[in-house]
Length: 233
Length: 233
DNA sequence: GTGACATATAAGTCTGACTTTTTGGTTCCG
DNA sequence: CGGAACCAAAAAGTCAGACTTATATGTCAC
Image (cartoon, rainbow over all chains, first blue to last red; front, side, top):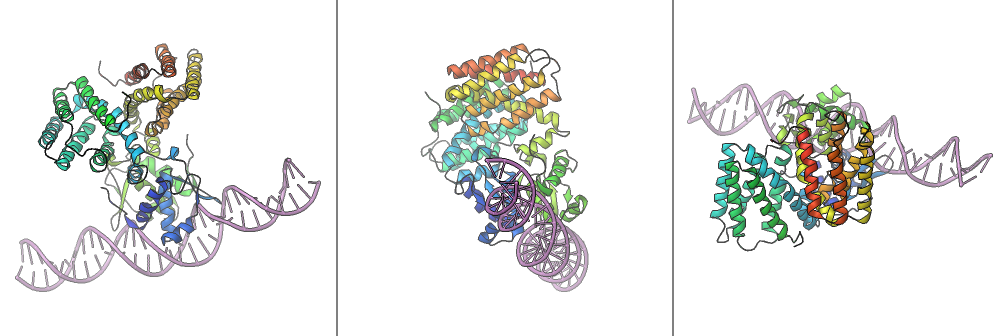
């Protein structure tokens, strides 16, 4: 998905990051830089760079005379795409997927409403195209092709909202949707009702009907929540 | 607000980070590590660590034989608390404040709804206490004391939602609220209607009335949007 | 027990030498 | 004139070793 292990320190991170987010080193654990350097067979400089990155993600804290201590999960920068990827790859996957889906359910309806106001003609066209692609691949076990258009649809919505914070959640939504198709539920063709909703959202955005776009998108996200058994009846 | 410049590389970051987020080095600009090291009068190792951190924030990209190039704003990790702080401190402040307020308006109502379902007795008590503190300081130019309780109120809501992604937005909300009091509008006492809404939200959460908590919180955030002239009438 | 002091420890810093990748120009041939 | 192969320089990347600094902890006197 993203560029892996740029350089030596990157490869160290690819190994150490997932280990920490997976709880392999529980909060409070103390690591020592030169010991890690030996373990990973890299120089101290390289290991120091890796530790600095982990520190900037608030995964660890480095203090003199103590070492590198692992922080509690509650302090991690959970919006860091790298951290999200590490957690989705490990044992935290279910919880991460749930919390991200709840996040989606809060953001996307508002984003769709804003998109209805601010989307460019080009974005409206893209949206319609995506919706068409979804319909075309909604039957006959063409899940991969469906996913491509589904992902593109939601990315366009987020981008068209005109809000930079929303736009940057594109990668997150991509991960969640891909995860759902590849690992979780979704063995059969997608719910026809959901497909229809996407088409209607595209319509609403095109017509500039913010309220309708928001309401319809909320229905989509409620569906996503129900798939994961979140939300009491 | 947060720990400043831990170590030498931290002080470099405190200088370089804001410079980049302020657009002082426009996207595509090329920096050279050893030149920077000379400018900042630090060793190459220290500068390399700083660059690694900037790289992990997607502010820059480091490539062999070319140097350290500044990335376009659209690729920055805008949810990194450090990046947010840097942007709030610079010329980007107004735009950053707006996009964060829109983000709040999406998140907080949902968080309040969840809080109504999942808040512990202790959290309910805290919430009530905060609301009382807000009322007590809502008149007579006691803005600072009011702010403290306002911030605490919203942090408790986010934490009580039980969603880790929401909880981690506590710092962001704190920055936005503090920014509003210290630099933007808000010369007079807070809007009495807003104060009442907070009290009612506390009530709704205590009673477990998710829908009411959500709706009331939405009214609060709409008020915040209006203060910044976001949202057409 | 409390305070001052000594000590060991691990991170932090600096320097210099070396390696590797990549860009951009140069040359040579078709 | 154009393209392919090649070469050289530039900048990041890596490593090793020596030194500095902060600080947690243990010790000792009172």
